Length: 520
Figure 1 (cartoon, rainbow, N blue to C red):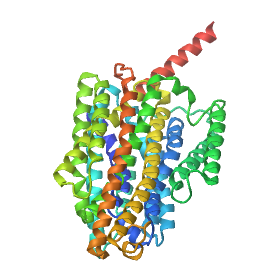
Figure 2 (figure 1 turned 180 degrees about the vertical axis):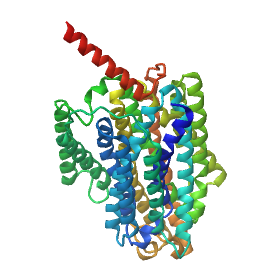
Figure 3 (figure 1 turned 60 degrees about the vertical axis):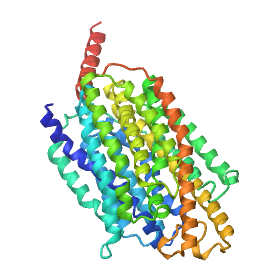
Figure 4 (figure 1 turned 135 degrees about the vertical axis):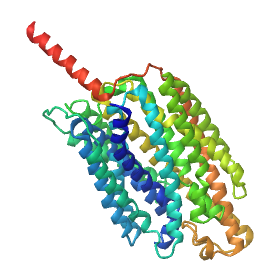
């Protein structure tokens, strides 16, 4: 395909990815307002974020497997349709339970977009040229990540609109993406073959993952880490996943082909993706809350404050992608990205309620540069080292484990944040001689800062500042483990043929082999 044909085909993909990014970022600065308006708790704040991540994580392998069997364009449009339904449900929610349910529906759609966009890119673009176009996706990612919080902040701050439009605003973009995909994406027809969908394996994987993720979300908050609930959820999760491995090893069309883990590159990039998810998403998802609660900024200003991290990510991913396409050398950027990400997380672990914006911006930029060099290139390394027939499975496995890492990080660190905030507030209120309870909105609720008296306000700001810094300190070892993992990845030359071309070559080779066997 020519550059023009590739760019035309990517227009619908970029619109779809923009929708998926917008779903998470537009809500970021609105969440404190949403949770306060719905009179929900800190655990509900975490659940609104976790519900989408959990649904996305659990369904990514299913979308990836389906992409190896069915029409990729139709699956992309179906996932966008799921996103539209979830967005409308979220916008009309009048209690936090319906909001969390709608985020699950959004997450299912986002799981399809996350897996399928990268699968389609690998199908039409050779790995050697992929870095150049990955920079375009980096630009879309940056625009969606920057524009989302800004738009969300403006919507929340505009009295005649409000937070509900944070969900409605994504609907027209999703409908535009569906139309663009129909018009511009042309994929070669896949030869029809008898397909047996592994429904049992899919159920066991989803159920097992959900059981473990629900455990890490609720443990330490709704019940103790050492409790019968922990034993029940972990036991059920492990048993379901063991059963899933047993089924996947024996079915003709497994959801996750276990054989791909014999590939060293796939295994190492999968582990690194899991650790990046824990470190990146687990640490940064609470930054907006820190900006608004600890630093006292409005939702709009909080959106602007995330700009340095996004610009760092955009510049590093674009430059690294261009250089990789030109030279074909990629491992050094994985190693450098892991080092820089660890340094950025370590620097952010020193913040508090009095940290200057200049210093905070520098720390966030360092983190963004590291993530930009690391995250997308892990996918490139894996896609370059698997047969074309397993591109969907390999890509979805990486997305699955990165999303699972993000869900685990968000859940565990969210519980740590809630407990640390409650502890710091209790100590601060006791030291100031202020009764705990009404003034702070309760230890387990997200306070409305505009209603707090000045002494309580200072205590709350300090509590959230200290607790947020602790999250980055806990995330730093995960980045160091990711560095250790990528060091052992073996660099291989990037292929110069696309996934579709390789698939045709593999089919031709298989046909020739069959003819030879028949002739003999």
